[in-house]
Image (cartoon, rainbow, N blue to C red):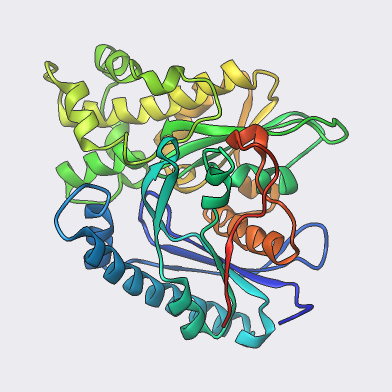
Length: 368
């Protein structure tokens, strides 16, 4: 709706723990959250999206079908969100729908997100903005991470601040304090929950290690941790981005070769790995940070948060809830913001983060 300040953001992250949908009002400098719903993904759809991260048979057909199912799941989440907020579809300017990344190879000039934005526009009756990464990649960038631009708009404070989103992959945003005219820093650090979740699924039959309770009963295996940290990606200078293409069960199996470690101790070690790569990234690239703000699913892993407090010492570690945005809503809100930036015809990439040749508009428009 022309003139409307209401936008919806949708997110299914690398962890594939479900769909987060937020309704945001951008009529003032600080976005106002008007509603949030979380929908679990059907097991069959989640399993298929995970399988599509690996080369397999009949991928084109399966990806297209999965995109249709995902769009319908998105539309159901949008419907429930609007119902809960008492808002009609025609009152919403646009939906920002990132889709589900299954391949990310900026070095080869492409990225693939499973999505069916035209179907979502048809079912929701709302304009959809999608395909946020491709233009940045076309301009020589990584196409990711995208969240630092939103973090810079929403979370800058009086002191230098590091914002870390811990989804399947963890990414870091370094924010100079207000009043300092220097660009934000941002890049993917490495695995967030992706290995932790995969190991829990394999050994507990659960998609996550809830609250980090399983890891809490294990011990970090120092030699295995050193082997895990011996990964060339960690030493790469930004800009850099990654995903399940690199950090997956096959990567872990290769690193574990030759070690006889109790599964629970492996889980503790994987949790420590996530904390270590984040702490190391902050120390190396944004040592001036006075505090560390955690968002994403990792914020709900108590064991990981304790390890982060140690890995980021002497900095204060807190969740984004302290800044007024619930940790599980930040990424969806970022895509509502990216949709708003596209509609307002503003560039939304940060060349200093992605390595693109310059500012570019991000997204493609699918009218209702």
